[in-house]
Image (cartoon, rainbow over all chains, first blue to last red; front, top):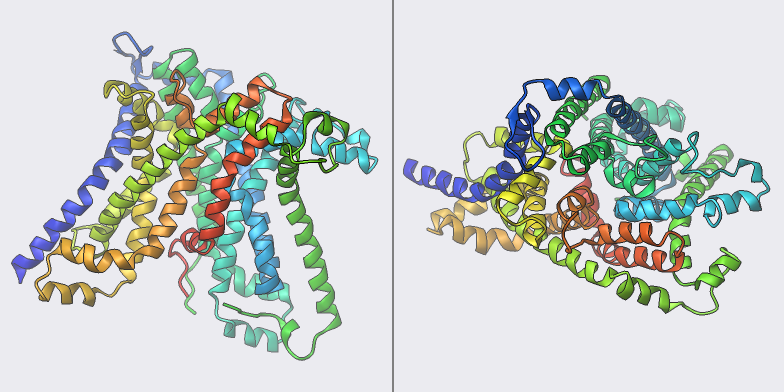
Length: 295
Length: 288
C-alpha cells in the first residue's frame, strides 16, 4: 500500500511539472532577472555593467518618475475606493430589490467588466470628445453649457476623468462578488433582527456587511491589484498627457526601457513599484482584517 | 436561489418600504443608464455615415452603414488583427486549460507534498505587478529568437494566466469525492486512465469558468502586446484599434465599428457563460 501511495505522488508531480515550468519560467525567473537588471547599466545591445544602486538613486531623484508614481498611487487608491464602495452599494440595492428584477440590473451593471480596456478607452475618448462627444452634447441639451470642458486635455479634469472611467469599469465585478456572497447567507439570520424591528440598513450594517467582509477584502485586493496595472486605459485615453500630467509607472517604465533604451533604470522603477504595490496590499489587509464568524 | 430579506415580501407591506423600493429602483436605473449609454452610443454611431453623425449625434441612421464595418475590417486591417487575436487567445486558452487541469488535479487529489504551500506560492506570484517581469520576459523572447511571433504572445500569456486556472481547477477537484478515485484505484485503473475516463467528463463547469476567464483576460491585453510586438508586423486587436484611433482621430463611424467588432466574441461568451463567470468570480471563496 505504501508503494502504491508513492506512485500516486510521482504521477502527481509529473502532472504538476509542465504547469510549474510555465509558472517559474514566466514569473519567477523574470522577477529575479529584473532584480539583477535593476543593478545593471544596460541599453539592450552592449555588454551590461554592474552599477550597484546607481539606478535606484537616479530613479528616486527623477521628478518625472516620482510624479508618475504618485499618479499611480492616486489613481489606484481613488478608483479602488470608488469602485468598491459603489460596487457594494449596487450589490446592496440589487439584493434588496430581489432576484427577478435584480438580475436585469446585475447583467447591465456587470457588463463593463467584460469590455476590453482598449475599447473602454476608445469609448470614453469618444464620450469626452469636446465637439462630438456625448458628455458635452448632453450638457448642451440640459442647458449646462458652462460646464463643458476639453475633458481629457484639461489639467483640472484629465485625471478625474481617468478615475471615473476606471470606476465605471471595475465597480461591476465588485458588485457581482459581493452580491454572490450576500446570497449565500441564510435568510434565517435576519429573522430575529426583523422581529426586533431592525431597519433594512441596520440589518445590512450589523449582519450582512460583517459576514461578507472576507469577500469585500478579496474584491478590494483584486481591484487594487488590477488598478495599479493602469497601462491600457491611460495609454488609450491620454497617453500620459497632457504633458506627463497623467503618466503612471507602467507608462513611464515602457518609455524608459523601449524609447530611451535604459533597461536597468526601468527595471529599478519596476522594483520600486512592486514594493509600493506590496505595501498597499498589506495595508488594505490590515485595515479590513476581520474576525471569522460562524453561522 | 431566491432568498428574500426584509419585510417587504411578507403579508404586511408597509408604505415606507414601498417608497424605499422605488428610490432604489430609480438609483439603479440611473447607474444602469450611465453604464449602458456610452456603449449604446458607440453601437449607434457605428451604424451611421459620418455626415449623418455630424448632422446630429443623437438621431438614428436612415439605413445601416455597412461601409463603416467594411472600412474597419479591410482598410484599417481590423479583420487581420481579429484573426491574429483569435489564434493567439484560443491557443493560449487550450494550453492553459490542459496544463492547469493536470496541475490542479495533482494539487487536489494526488498526494503532492506541500500542496497548500505550492498553491499559495503560485498564487502570490500573480500578485506581482506585470511591470516587474516585463523586460526580462522581453529579453528572454529575444534570446529564444521568437520576438514578435505568435509564440512570443502565447507562451508568456500561458505562464501568467496559469495560477488562477490552477486555483479554480484545484478548488473544483477538491469538491469531488475522493472515494470515486480510490474505487478506480482498487479496480486497478492507472492514475492517467482514471483522469481521462472518470475526471475529465466531470470537469466541464470548472473548464467553462477557466475558458471564459482566460479568454477575456487575454482578448484585450495591451501592455505585453505593445512591448513585444512594437516592431513586428504581427498585431493583436487591441493594438490595431489603438493605432486606428491615433491615425484617424475623427473618423468616428469606422472607429465605432471597430470597437463593435472586438466586442462580438465578448458578447457571445457573456451570453453563453454568465453563470460560470459568477461561479468563477467568487472562486470558491464563498461557501454557503
